[in-house]
Amino acid sequence: MIGSEVRLEDVSARGDERVEMLFDAHYVPMCRLAYVILGDESLAEEAVMDAMLKTFSGWRRIRDLDRADLYLRRAVINVCRSKIRRLVVERRASTVLQSRAERPEPAWDPERHEVRREVWDAVLTLPERQRACVVLRYFEDLPESDIAEILDCSVGTVKSQLHKARARLGKTLGPALHGGDA
Image (tube, rainbow, N blue to C red; front, side, top):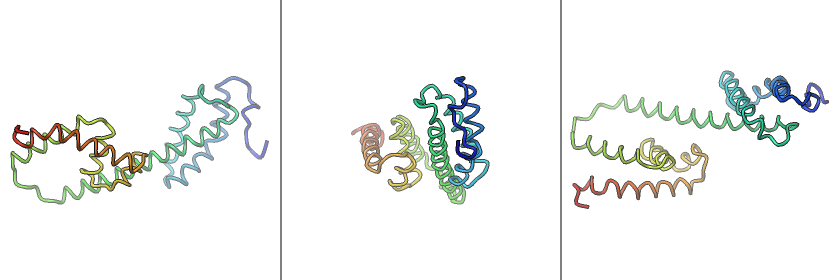
């Protein structure tokens, strides 16, 4: 053993003892890792607890239990990445909501509001990934590269999903937007 490193093979074969040893040996170092990534102590602790939960709930799927610390480290990093993506979206949404709150309300136009409702209803029928791309691109006004980062996919995938969504919305909304004579 090197320093305070705990080897899981030194623990009996009982699974709960291994889980307990993994937690005891790696909680503090994983909190430091998450803090370096997130820059917030409470978010870091939350990320580590989420990663520990994922590790322990998937314990039977870990092939090499003596290397469970690597699985845990990867889980911490993945949870931190997810939290960062969520924070970026929340901050942008907050900025958009704040800017909308500062704009004066337009005069009531029932026809315009009906079209908006029809468009939104059609967007809600899109598959989840297409809907996310449409909302991020057209409602949040984000560039495709940011959308790809948020959705953890390539820019090409974002473009493809937007193309499919526009085609589907065109079919759905064409008759409604043209007075039913499309």
